[in-house]
Length: 304
Image (cartoon, rainbow, N blue to C red; front, side, top):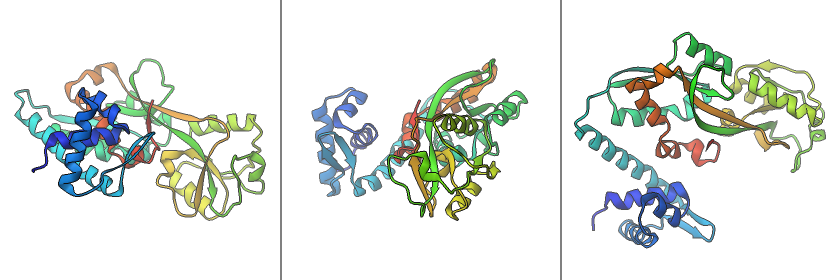
């Protein structure tokens, strides 16, 4: 029996939503239909695709490999359907400003998905911005159509809530600590400050709960900070996406207080209404596209 796209669609839905029942709700069909389709697909491939437990279903190692190919096949189908639609072809250039971590871990997937449905739109990615104000300046000066910018935003901008990650403690792997973490376990380590407003705000909150951060270096480059931490030169507080995947010689721990970094897709209202910009926004907000990123699959990114 040949593989069916409907089986792959159901397989991806279960992987994305974590259970057969949630996938059935997403696809507006019965759970038994989902179960039957997955069983037929496992039989055809001679593989077990999911580890099933009371709390839900997660892909096996083989399932993850099949999942990547299934997403590619469904994306090709989507591209074929889009090509067949009798609608005007969109073209032009859309510039997106973002932090380096989004340029690394999200936008390559978005660019691939955009090329499949709107090959005439060129996506210009500028990930050179180190902080929120730099992103907003790029919007104000017209150097970017869209920014993936950290909330809160200045007045006068249109925005759509997007994704979030968490700030984490970044320690040398050799430094002895136990969980739950207490600030006194950091004694003797210098603090390496990430130079951005969001990290400054989190640091002040940590100080209010007893953190005695010894003065140290202040750097804008998150990769440099991680390298210094790995060499035992101090510790830092950084967004989890900025240190994903976890570098060798570094240990990440949850902070003793919640510290979320929330993002929005922002821009001038007129710019965001342009058809080619609206098409890029639709791709960026595509849940299947985001679910295909390694950062999402590792639990680093989540919907706000």
